[in-house]
Length: 133
Image 1 (spheres, rainbow, N blue to C red):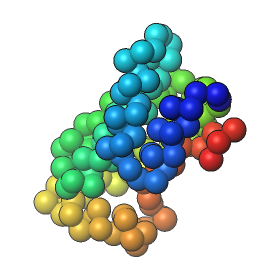
Image 2 (image 1 turned 135 degrees about the vertical axis):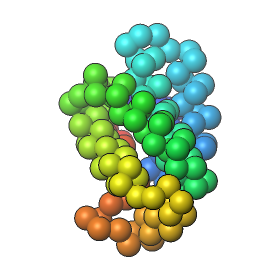
Image 3 (image 1 turned 90 degrees about the horizontal axis):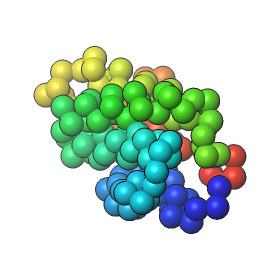
């Protein structure tokens, strides 16, 4: 992976700077062509889903995580040096957990997620790569 902006977006994502990641990825996405364009959009949607979650927006988190996962599944197991399998798995685990809670308790869920107090070590997804982690 030689795209410095993509490396920046991955670092922002992994540091849970989801809004910053959105801005960085959106610039890459707008300039890209298929098949990369849909791939970047999938990551962008997962990032925005996580951002919605940190802003206690259950519906936005569920919708965007679902859309992002749907797009990223087409790129498994690996694409552009990114471990897509792992990103989809971790995003899906988060989505399932969100779908099982009362939307009114999303604030408590997010607090526990951020402090790593949830069952099964559930956390925000991480983007793992073969060249940059």
